[in-house]
Structures are given as C-alpha cells and as structure tokens.
Amino acid sequence: MNEQLKTNNPNINTKRAIRSFVLRQGRLTKGQEQALISLWPVFGIKYDANSPIVFESNKQAVLEIGFGMGASLIEMAKNAPDKNFLGIEVHKPGVGACLMAIEENQLSNLKVMCHDAVEVLENMIPNHTLDKVQIFFPDPWHKARHNKRRIIQPQFVQLIRQKLKLGGILHLATDWQHYAEHMLEVLTQAEGFENLSPTGDYIPRPDDRPITKFEKRGKNLGHGVWDLQFMKK
Image 1 (cartoon, one colour):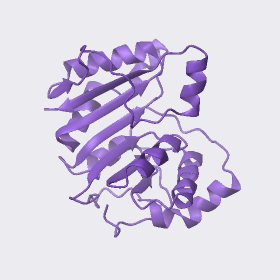
Image 2: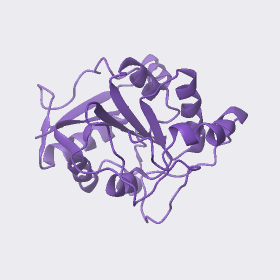
Image 3: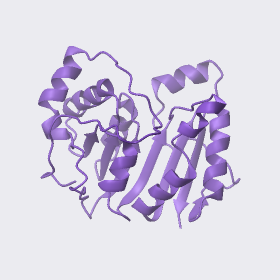
C-alpha cells in the first residue's frame, strides 16, 4: 500500500445515521494508548475522502472489516507475506492491540484504519482493486428490531462487489445460525456473485482462517460456526 498516505491519529466520523456498530468506551491499556501515539504514524492510515488508497499491483489486496483485537488478522498476515492486508476497526483498544502486534511480529504487509468501513469503501477504496474482503463474526444484532443494523445487507454487498476484482472473494463467518441464514439469503439473491459452496450453502472453515480463542471457547460449548464464500463473477 502507498506509504505516502497521511497517518495522523485515528479519526472517527459520525455523520451516517444508521450504523452497524456501537462505539463502546473500552478502556485503553497503557500499551494500547502508547501504540496509538507512537505506532499509528507507521502502521495507521487516516480516513481522508480525498486520498484513495493505492495497493501494490503485484500483490493481492485483502481487506478485513471489524478485526476486533486483531489476533486472526495478525496470524493471516504472518502466514501470507506475499499479500497486503488492510484492517478496519472502530474500537480503539482493538486498534491499539493490533498495532502492538504488528510491531511485535515485524509485519510490513498490514495497515490499519479506525473509521466506519462503509465510508472507507465508498471514498477511499478504488473500484476493482481488492482480491478479498473478509468479515468474521460481525455483531449479529439478534433482536428483530435491530436487524436493520446488520452490516450484511444488499446495498452493502453491492458496494463490496464494486471494490472486488473479477474473481475476488467475499468471505463471511458467524457463530449465529440465524445471521448465517440471513447472510446466505442476501448473498444468494445478490447480483454478480457465485456461491463457492458445492452444496449451495456453507463451506468448511478454510485453512487460511485462523480459529480465534473466542471461537474455540464457543466450539467447546457446542456452538456452531458458519463460513460462506462468494466469488465476484
């Protein structure tokens, strides 16, 4: 990714009316706070609607939306040094933790943003530039009156499609069955996508998606996990 992009402190914009997330006031550890000060200029990208992100043409570009504390994203970046990763997360403790892990693992192929992913996609990601978009365990908003806040909606899926290259992959994962069914319905009806599941629904967890501690704990309690992969055609 272009190293000349402005990299000031994280900036959260709040002009959109309905969002798929709630900004929680999580307490920063001293390490996370220091990382946001000292490491952000190196590994962070400030939101700037007038500065599109330039990805290296000789490397695949992978975008993860909502990386949490960043553990699985860090693992994927470590395992695929030939790819460029961009992670977007709105919660500062998670961004700080990910910045610390980037430095600890001496990764040069991962940058992070602290902003609304919809606005980043709309204004900073050029069309047809991403090889993969991954969204793992997004907030299911399980109450019916909150379903409209789910990030996986027809309009958002088409926005992702604009940013993917031909043959690019949208990879989703959730541990809520009803949300998995919602995801499958939205993607099945979406124009321009092909389900990569041979059975027309879900796929086994791919080897390149690490199992998180949260996921392991859920599996031990008998919780299911559903992965979906759709290709832009």
